[in-house]
Image (cartoon, rainbow, N blue to C red; front, top):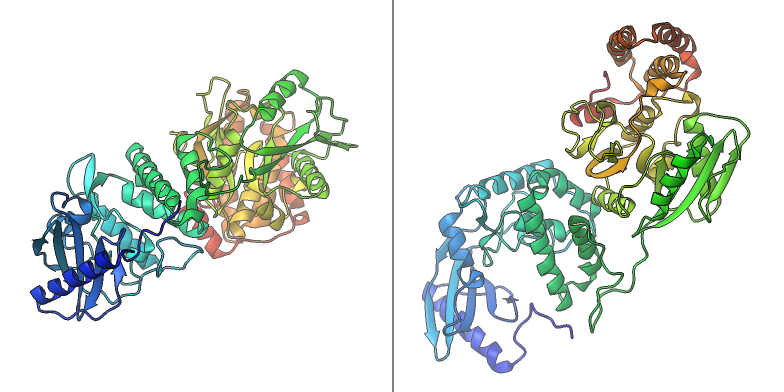
Length: 561
């Protein structure tokens, strides 16, 4: 049975008793309470404005007084540095009447407007200036230093109804106390699932804390308490979204409905993923093994298309669509054909997954976890898993989608992709026109990533989610040296502002020639460079603007290398 927990006491006697106690507290402080009544948890607290102050009274049975609800404001006033913007405490008297203990707190009144009014949860995204986020980050940096390595004094009821717009003030410390690191930020993030852009901003600002073991533990505690509150009738609409976040953090699939005598949600449709597999019938054993791991994926509904690039596919999973291309039109063109076939089949999924026919899923929850990451990063057009060899450990440098590749296990924002194992939003893919088919092979991922950034998107590297692939080298393909060199010039002409083209091509000419001298293929490389320069104007030129150059640079890879 659901109940309203932030309301005045239902019994008239309890209501009158709390009002008399509040009036008595006002007399103690020589103030006059005139603002509207604000009731707290199960009618145990009552607050009102009193001139330039806020007066709050809390009650408990004699012998039961204490705890965060009782001590939180005083604890914060004692332990939290003054640099953290919050209301100042002016007095805390205690008294008792027969069977009941009372505490009154007089704090300064803050006139700033809360980020949200009447509810801690965001039902839609809200714009806040960068300065506000900087102030919040600074405040939590200060709080993180308040004591002990396992617990710290925190706000503990952190949500946007307890945060003001600029200038930032952290309100309502009545529930402050010693909690696990990460709890407060986890609670702030937990109240944001219906506002994905804002949730992503929290993740960007505080990922350094949320993505630690302590941060994940704190967030799970916050999510568990929030789910418990949902079952009690407090913001029950958040339950399925909170459960999904808990599923992501634990790796444990949630039930289709939160069960109980008064279930909070109907069974939810699972995420749908359209998977494109390209084949030339050249590795049937590997294809069959890879498709078996695809069909074992759980937690998502998968629809598959197998594209025969110049052939009729021979290894096709049950129920899959097939596309038979009369000739080999290249990898990007073949992938586009698969994506188009899925769209034409009707009801395209929100997600496209492009899968090499010899790449395997090491776990049955890979796609579900990738979708969960994408939902946590709505600014990201693509999510890239970590690609390893079959040993689940070895990751060649070229498979790490960033310049600093020494630690392939570090997640974060990226500007490139490994094309054969990548999840892409269907709407973003369609917005920029998909893969560039004229490239045929090599660097189509860089081209697509640049165009997605130019359209306002970004990319995310989910380093804790693995895919397996044979440890091969691209130089095994006869066309590698020529097409790689040619396509470097083509994608620069297609995407870069004129001043950056010589910088980009100069850098890559030195790198490519050095590699060719050491590893072979120099004649083919020179041929590709000549071909690329001579035919560059066959490519449609849409240079990125300065903003895109800045965003790529800020993400760790300026478009000159």
